[in-house]
Length: 275
Length: 258
Image (cartoon, rainbow over all chains, first blue to last red; front, side):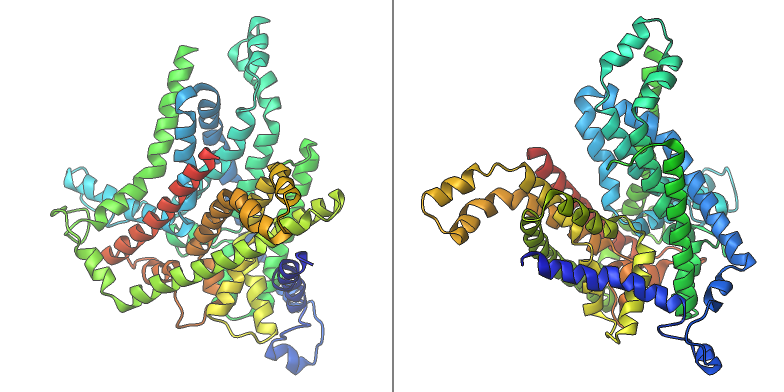
């Protein structure tokens, strides 16, 4: 009985809307005027519209951006998580708190803060001009590099946390054993540490990749007009073009692609995800 | 080995510096009397006074507080009820139920925002403050997880003692169970408050044209290429970040004491 109110709420406002969206994408619900005039009750038109060359290109670009973000985050987050979990000792919890705190500040404000630092009127340009190193402000943002930088900046803490939690459970005697038995630090890392911490790496990949593939805020604030990603398309289809059916179809395709990708990835590495 | 450790240390310090520099720079420029940090003309609260005398910003600020406050209270209520009720389900069923609830936390916000707004349009539910609150409330599982973890780890011994000594179920709940759960309720509440406070996409999709929260206001005035940086927005963004950081600090304090 106690379970009922929250469950019903969750069903109505979270689970059912997904089916409604599927219905909207198929034109069953909220058909567009053009569709009504053609007398179609159900149509694959919106999915066809979705699978055009431009969308596929944008989807590919989003997956690429998400992959680059994930790889860069892992490369940065792993050594840092390793340092905090294994080496930092008495500063361990303090450093962990410093990593967690930025997560409490929304992506919008962190990306905006990056804008105040790197923008044409920003702090960095100000210093460089003040020192007489450059005369005209550098265009550090409104391009793809800035988007990638902003993404990595935003997602690093998300990658550090799961890595930290597996690394902190790492049994140091296993590493010592490997060293004593004659393996060098590199070999120990590749053969011992990395395999043991695989679940953490997996969790970090999933935690960064899924949201990064649909990211809207960071590319919109830091990218140029051509830096269009799936998130941008969905946002514009709904809020600018008011083409709900198309927006729904795109978001269903995007979610499916990402989920299939994640499932394939988990199969490939042969691990079960434990959160 | 020593060299490796030193490298790790410097590397970690550099990453942390990278994480904090933009936020610190923005906060500093909001206290600058000049228009931008290019010419630091001295410490001043000009932009804060300007921001806080802007009716639109005040309204957005109050809306943010209102929405996050209501969402927090309702989410706690739902989470507590659910956390107790799940106990009665079997192991397998409660496992499945938990997984179902986790979906709303994992799914990207843009997909969630689009689905719920299409639902509202389909049932002709008016967009606006109620739609925004309902949209945020779908995140109640974040509170549920924290409370549930505490409940599972909690010894039943105090509740049983209270019952044996003759207290009713209700008295036991109010005087024994609830105080024991309080740390989890507060930390779960802090989490959902921040999620709601920070939500941009869901709010942007489900709001009515006249209704703005702080993130929506910042987006509407500052986003977009070439619009540049507005010092008032720096000030209000700094206030918003200060709120998030205070809540984060309280949360961490609470969790480490636990």
